[in-house]
Length: 579
Image 1 (cartoon, rainbow, N blue to C red):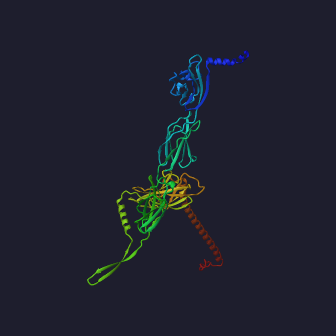
Image 2 (cartoon, one colour):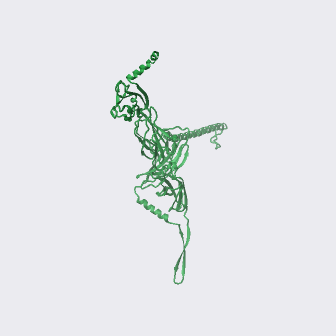
Image 3 (tube, rainbow, N blue to C red):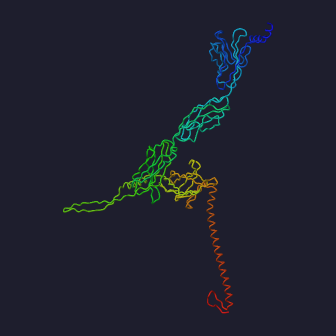
């Protein structure tokens, strides 16, 4: 018995010490920043009744709670350090667990729960170690702020950063019909932003947008997905497969198809058909006339009537959406059919008292005279309109050779004032007309030009006419591809040479050094021609002189021969003198 007691002496001492000081139960909790953490503590309220409780930070002292954060009298909370500390359990049942709202990394540490049980060394003690670690940010809630034809602006409110500062955002954009594997992902490095605009979208297209938030720990979950549809814009492509067919001396049928689907930029509402007569005598077009056709089919058509016989007409067609009108499609001039002449007999009966006399006369009749009336009305309408700027010329491609482009244009209606000049706009195929364009001026009498392209590529060209009242609308647009491999790239792209030296001028700032070399080369060519002419003349003079000297020598030899014979003769002439 003595031996057994000695063996259990350490255990007995431990139990005695636990009774004297009170045993403390310990546990650990790991949670992330921003969450609510609950530290458990319970006692038997049915046995003890409702008892006072306190929670403090740090090890539990011999009495009370150190760094007390909350205290209850057994029925309700009588003190708390901040509103973040709560006793959310049922106090009547002895659940005095501590809940800390929106924990932060600074909340990490040891927390002690003390239940005051009456009597010596009877208090219930429970100790919890809380570890708070930073996490990923919360996901965003994204909203649409503004939607335009080619852009969309989205915005969001700041979210919880996960305990680490937000470093960037990620924006995903995709077509609505495709999966997220095809998204275009853009990283936004400014963490202070709450709004961003996505540009270079296609009009009348549906897109999906989502966002992510990033901190040093990682990336948040995806935000809500926005589905947006950009607004419609004017079509970017002209109607396709435009054809013209003369039906009668007074009508032409025009057929066409809608623009390419990816260039319509919305729902096609209608087509604008503009046509005008070409005057072969004045070599210019007359005023435009307009008609409209509702867009309903994949093959549209219209018959232009009340036209003049044996007359050429130019027609352009433009597609319209509710946002505007697109570029024009063109076709070669189409001439109405020739007028058909018919001969008829008109019989006139003149009654007399005795008999009837019949007279015949031949008359030539045309099918109609409505076109003459229309022409007269047109002349009257032109005189009643004032302050009319010119119509744009019709530009056509004459030839493309290596890196040179030859153009010519047909003047249109000059308006109420004579045309004072033309200018050409020239840009890269993918550039906007508002940017990176070259402007070249021409005189009013010039109708053709040649452009030397230093940088081979594909370009767009259009022209304008000017008079004292203003500038015309842009002409039809030519898309021209030049190409000469191995050509060095220079700062400027174009030079212009015209058929008439005095008529074509290049706007300042549009001619590159290489272009200047080309222009100077033409002057050097003239100088070389003059020098060659002078050299040729000198060479001819030298040849003639040498030939004359040889003749003189031959004459001298003949004289010597003739003197020895005692007679002087010159090429078979009579004797001059006897020696």
